[in-house]
Length: 268
Length: 351
Image (cartoon, rainbow over all chains, first blue to last red; front, side, top):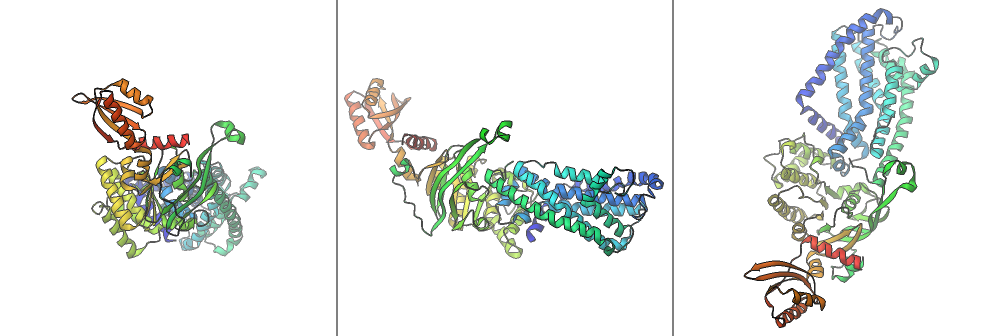
């Protein structure tokens, strides 16, 4: 674990050496809450019935959706992105030549990006709360394992995309497809139960991990329900995570073997 | 081993426990995939042999040079030893650990000095770069701090330790790369053209550092891939010559130079009688003659291979004297690495 932290720490030091960019990344986030506030306020009456039982306030509903989407996006892209950066900067070869397990390397290369996104999400939530978003703060601790599960559930997508980068030097379409499906059918902007969407398209949302994660997160963080009330969503998400992690680990090992065979493991 | 190796009185390779690196029949081919047809059809793909049945033993504490033109297979061999590329056939062990069966143990004892400066984290200080790799090599706490200070002092970077690497000169980066590699106290070090981006003076001082502070003081076995003759002759106990993936010669640098270069002489003659030179060529006494014009006071310098070494030189001098050509000086010529390699490869092709 200390190797993962060492990599995360070095990525943090490198990122914070660009001081202006570091400050802007927080500033832009806080500013982005302002238009969301005004748009959701205008749509509150229209959306009130649709989001009933999921916080009832469209501003808080959307902020939690966008925060979760940011976390998912960061998770699925941090790993392949970290791998691509390490390849193009030439550090990957040096890292691979150390007695560090591939799992530790992958977690270390992507960990900073994910943790930073979670931190930025917290800042966005505080900014939204300051503008009137109704958040059940006493449930913050209970919502953290849900956020962690959302991250872990999307790791397999990241691992498969990283495997594509390793073997073929391209991310492939999977991450983008998952992200697009999560954005429009995972309950970010409106609940997946909304009427009017054709049944076959609506059915897709049952296969999107974010659907379950968001339902659970809103129930706990916006409704103030206990985490035990969302056991069904969390069980489905956990089952998906276990199966997908095993499959992606097998895929990644195969990609690693292939890259070592063709000799492009650390090639730009 | 190929014919050329057997013609040279090379040091015998002993498969004993004192061998740091043992390669046996190491073979690797890469698929050359160009164009869409090759992407979809296996038949359209071309295979390129990067290494072919390479076998050599490298003794503990030895400084071993790997020579060869671009594309000879040096980097592929290094990447295999660093467990970044898997061989198609053959085996390799490093300090007794098989690169395929125990890659993690190999990475504990072998460290490649990746000469590419980009492999450093430029937005971190030298000390932070060292701290990261110390952790990756399981060095922590006070022990890590002590080792980092010791190595930064060794490579003369103490004063710059807390500066961002992006502001370092090439020489400083190269020294930091070596320091980073030495963190794990490796028993085998791979150096791939370590001085290629250094000016001649920095390169010389860097070579001294490699020989005295790395190989001798740290007791490392060093494998060095280089194009630089001075570097190979100054540093290496033995060299191996790779040509198109084949290890065509292995031996001590002095033996190699003697084996393929001892018949090269320079003669100072006056007058420059071309017909006498042609006659010597015709009699097979000299070959590959090159004239260098007036050297001093009418003397011309001729560089040539003399059949039979010193006996051949005596025969040539006697013949020239009879033809009325004075020989003012006759001395052996030290070959450049390029000439040496050319000769080794020519003999390999002949064989």
